[in-house]
Image (tube, rainbow, N blue to C red; front, side, top):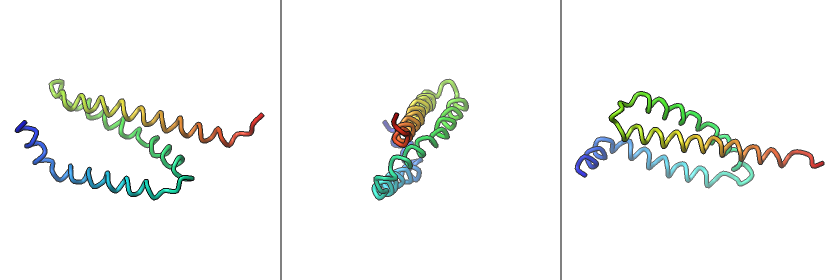
Length: 102
């Protein structure tokens, strides 16, 4: 438990930046008009391919004994992949609305 508090103390600035970015993201997203919400979010989800690449790099650089880095990297790959696929599914559904009906 003491090691956990030490990690928090060492990374206090980074944790603060992450918390502030969460609040900033919520504020920005809440002011987007509903007409633009779906295209913007589907595009943003597609950009999460960068997250997948970063997670693969983290997993590749981690030592085999570093279970925390491997677990977080694996989780980031899974969640990033779900986000990318979800973004493309939403975009496909959105584009289906503009096709002519037969």
